[in-house]
Amino acid sequence: MSNKFLKDEEGKFVEAERPMKYAEIISAEEWDNFVAKRRNEKFHEVSEKNRKRASKPAYPYKKRRTGYARLQQRILAEEKSDATSLPEHVLWKAARVGKDGVVVEAVQNVYDECETLSQTLPSTEVQDCRSLLSRVLNVPEYSGRVRGKGFGVTPSSFYKKPKTTNPTNKEVMETLAELRAQVLELQKENARYREERRGSEAKDTSDRASINCQPKFPEGITPCQLYLSSPTYRIVGKGNVHNTSGELLHHNPLPVGYMKVSVDLVLDTDALLPLPDVVSETRLI
Image (cartoon, rainbow, N blue to C red):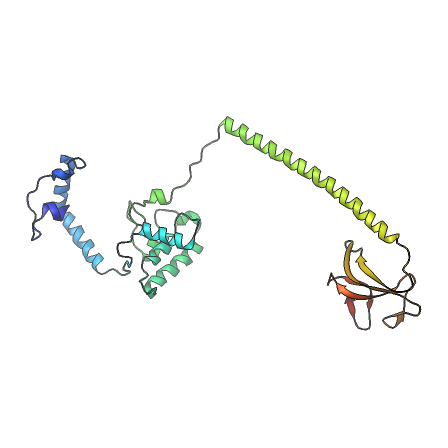
């Protein structure tokens, strides 16, 4: 606006009236204030100072016309992230990566310091008027914006805390009703579980009884399934029962009430042998 309406081709100020093209959005008072501000010497001093500082930035922005907001949207989309924003130092670093993908050492050092500081500062200190980035860069955080977040992001919006209000009586009663319903549902599920547990235990007892009541193995070699009752009742393997006279177990006579078993298939590699082999130190099936 200033270059187009207030200055001539040589950059000198001229007397200019309010452009009627923008009359609907710029009042006469706003135009007069704009003209007065642009002619103010202090404004020019600040403008010149900022222009010099921007001409040789220590950490140049490398995303051209892509602002922080669009850059953040692009990064979140590429990462398929559910987050709504990135930490300011993460976005600040991404904005200073060139097309070659190289991160200069100075930028990486700032990023690393921000990461370290974020781990040492309590969350209450991080969420204050100065961001991690402004702390590490050791520069003031100007009012009205958050460093590394771009145009339109203010401290009040970026560090916004959720409002806490006391619930109304209606909300309390609705919450209690929901909790009661959840408790009743849990009680029903617990009752169903206990019923199923009793049925399962009864079936397990019946299965054990049917196995224990089987007739004695016939003489000779008979296929069998191997079960253990401790610490839980379970099948641990398959093999054959050797019901023959003169059988030895680990070169020793079999104890009374025992028969020799050869294991063909192991289903529980951690199952302990009822009678371990002391000589070979074999303890597992």
